[in-house]
Image (cartoon, rainbow, N blue to C red; front, side, top):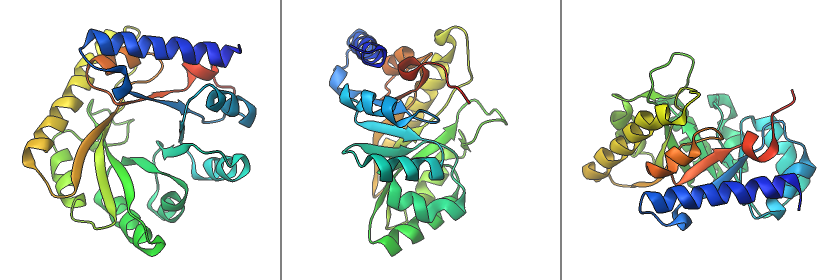
Amino acid sequence: MSVIEDNIREIRGNIAEAATKSGRSPSEIRLMAVTKTVDDDRILEAIGAGVDIMGENYIQEAKRKIEKMDVDVKWHMIGHLQSNKAKYAVRLFDMVHSVDRISLAAELDKRSASAGRVTNILVEVNVSGEESKNGVGLNEAINLVREVSLFDNLSIRGLMTMPPWFDDPEDARPYFVALRELRDKIIVEDMKGVEMRELSMGMSGDYGVAVEEGATIVRIGTAIFGARVY
């Protein structure tokens, strides 16, 4: 068994433990392999070990990998997306996690209509309010969801966030709680076409805490593939 396979098995065990601890079924949580700068052979190892969602940050890198590898997995866009790249995103990705402004949503809707499809999206929320992070502010998020819900060619499936980095993952817990509570508020509003199924939160250092607080997708790069070499 390879190092990558060992890592994935350990991560799945940790996810199951965190889910059980919080009274959830491990089957509720999906593991995404974050493949930015990861070479194709190592990605294929992860796929061989059962990971079926790949998260990419850049359009050009994703396009090359998707076309070259031609494997039966889901590809999700998790990086900041410029509006002028929306036409590529709607054709390449099964879900876009990083919708954080109405102008991007409008462009994705227009390009999705041209492609004859409905694009699944998550609204990215900057729970921490850090200027260095993308995402709509916590207080503006419900209004953005309400506006985006009016587009016919976008399907809002949930929310995404990235908390500050901490040495102790427990320090990230309040940010995960805040996203879950925001999700619950949106559910109460019962907006047409909005399904709050997904909470995309938790990365290599804090995914256990994220699962305990309701994550349905955890985005794991380093813990699967090791430290990135740029």
